[in-house]
Image (cartoon, one colour):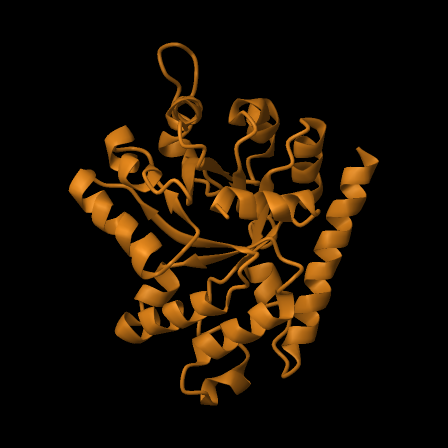
Length: 271
């Protein structure tokens, strides 16, 4: 099964939430700090609490790299626990000249075994091609991100009146010959999302920004439902994994994710 098929199976079944495992040892419940690997123990419990009701799991490399070798060990062990029917996303935001990208692609896909990766496109098509060559994987390319600084470059207006992020989308649609590309588009940029949803050409979209960053779940779902585009996942990190710091935090995580799923279903039915 390809990564795209895995994702489509989830979204077709009504699951659109991606659990963001941006695990900060300073924010996890204090009772876990006595474990040999607190980060992994936290991740294990989050995955156990959400398996079967999450579409995907996104692991942000930065939160593991900061701990050096031990962090990479936590990352590798965490990947092994992600259910086989859920998409695993290596949030590494790679993109470099050919030989370097080839090594990055091998690291993410061959060594760590992720189903998909996040990429930045600003060194051009040849920097992305080594990732695209893995035809069974999925590549989420940054289009318009959720942070305020997205305006610095991604929303620069070009001579033809279009924005740079729109050129990125058009180019990735053109390069999607292996049918293994998608986009990252910030849910905090709701007006731009509404205006550009048709540009995605039905390709998968990963949407950060709902929850702690203030993006609207309801507006995001309504836009995709109105556009008859179902292959999207909404990443939620802090608002989900840190929703409770008690010894029974897993129960709250399960309940919170079920509420997100229920709300999405209600919104889709109302459109």
